[in-house]
Length: 296
Length: 289
Image (cartoon, rainbow over all chains, first blue to last red; front, side, top):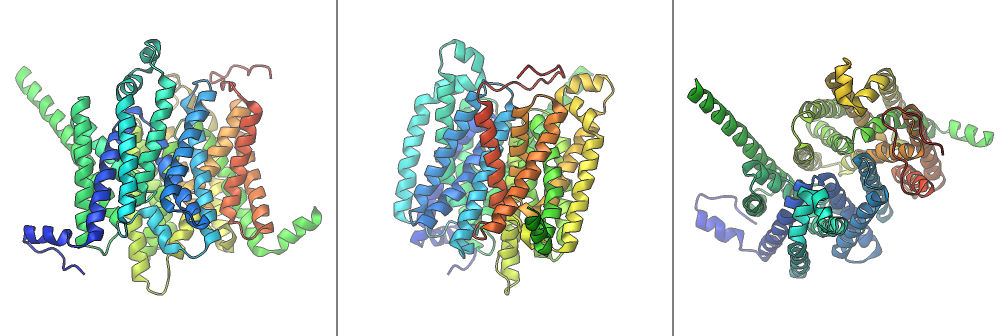
């Protein structure tokens, strides 16, 4: 099908978009990278990675159950992830805001039970082993134009909703007590955020697989927040980094199809995170040495 | 009742499942109590996912499965313990690291399935969801021995670990080796994850860790009572799950076990209602109930 990389960039580029499945993959990748970047940035800031991971994982039984019932997998992803978001958001509230420990026990239980349901659906369905690895570890093949349209609509709605609550959400994240005192509906904003995160997790896991969502949800935001503490700048960097990871990952997966796509994505994300963290450590060391030189 | 027990005893695969499963559940319950107390559920989750990568890496390279499992889990557990004390960016670091490790797992899985043309991905999938009814006698004995070892270590360090978990500053002031305990504890979590993977699966282990411990913490505020209650709920869930799975063969045993644990948690949640009684962390007597 493809001939691997030549050293002619323009020719490679033309090759990349020769087939409509690749064009669809790029469209889908671009949409989910933007959505995941925006929500991931808030998620990292709010330290809700565990909840995010759980929401992503939950979309696996959602999709498996939908396939089992003969419904569209796409709907299964969203329904499951949003339902789990509501459960996670509802439960800690009834604990009266105490200890994070019970919250994480709840999240862990939700996740394990969801995965157990996934295992059940897979065994009831029997013999869709290949699509099982796709559900867990992602695939970029066979994305239909209709699926791209669904992704686009859901992403647009989610981003609009995020924009609507962006300022109170930021306030509630940075200082929940003061925000509460100022009349910001902290709980409502938190619940709304989790539901949006569920939408994003459901979208991303359609491409990266339920287990590797963090490649686009956490790693870009983690990279950007290593580079700069300024909110607006790191938000923009997050989205740029997410797009870069998605685009590069798709290109590599196209030219070197012998290894799984999810591996390329997570590796690119991890490399960018490690590079940013290493760069930051080096920069602070240089500054320290410089200071010592000046004071000595 | 006795007929049941003799019937179960007469089936070797059930005998092994009960034997190994009880030890695994006991270890998971004890370890899980401290995991929940120390808010390290995400770390435990990450370690159980690492077990998957370790196992598939061993399958892909043809190394011994146990070496891959225990090696990966213990190394990553100690690395996380080393990272854990620094800074606040914990859960981002954990998330990035384990997502990459899962990506590696996907790589090894594809290498394994493409290199061995005769086999399908079944072994890889078994690692994810466990096959407790497929344990051999030697596997059952190894798992049980390792898990009982974990239990002994946890009980031995239980009291100082509790102190260090509840108030690290005061504990280190009274010369409890807080940092060393953190390392030993996460090492034990790693070992438990590795041992439990063959039975309940890398993805489902979290259910045996989080649900019983969460339920126990809601039921009692006394730390050691909660510790044993957590172990008891874990073992009870495992037994119930195995019996249900044996009675209804269409249901995978891992699902039944996790389902039983989740159901227990739900019932406890409904019974204790809200607001939750806060666990009395300072060791003062619990409020009258």
